Image (cartoon, rainbow, N blue to C red; front, side, top):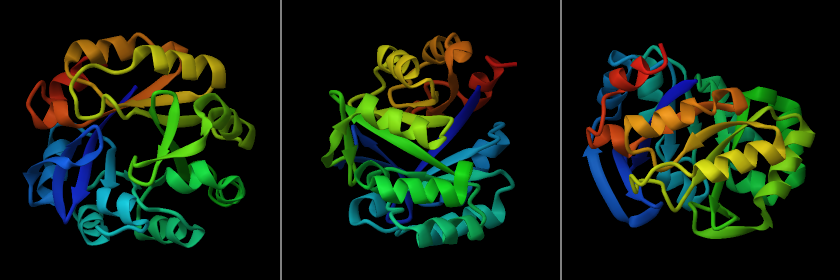
Length: 240
């Protein structure tokens, strides 16, 4: 199971939000490259980079920081936030991003999703950002006109093998992951799941580890690492 540190960017700085609320922001660093290097030094093999400005405005806005990370940090990364066109996906992949995360456009436009998967395959991954059973879009402000099982079934039918699942109500809240929601998504969709949102302790990671054989393929960890609840080295040690 892959443990993936999150680097959320807003105004070129590394921040964390509480439940995706832009008025509940805490800044951790003005140097994203330094942060990325820190996680790599602790053992990170993959990074999850989110452009919060891009998610809000509809197009990536922190590409300068992303390109600096790509040029100076020797591990692959996935990038999401405001990626809503085929051209944007192509440009990101050409710049060195290993995998592009899709959210809003994927949830709202089935024809776009079908075309994107046909063209890029597993170089893209969809993030199902959920709250109270609804799929949220546009920086987690609006709800898509569909429910989670329906969306997941569409992804499976197109050929996707895994998905990112974020419980928005738990993201940045340090209250533990939505284990029941993760189990239900795996059971209904037969997709592998990268869990995101709520991890607060090594105990939470062990709970997710127990679901590896059921389909949990990774976990994205953010605030718990930034707040020093545990180190990435300690977390990785659970999976040796």
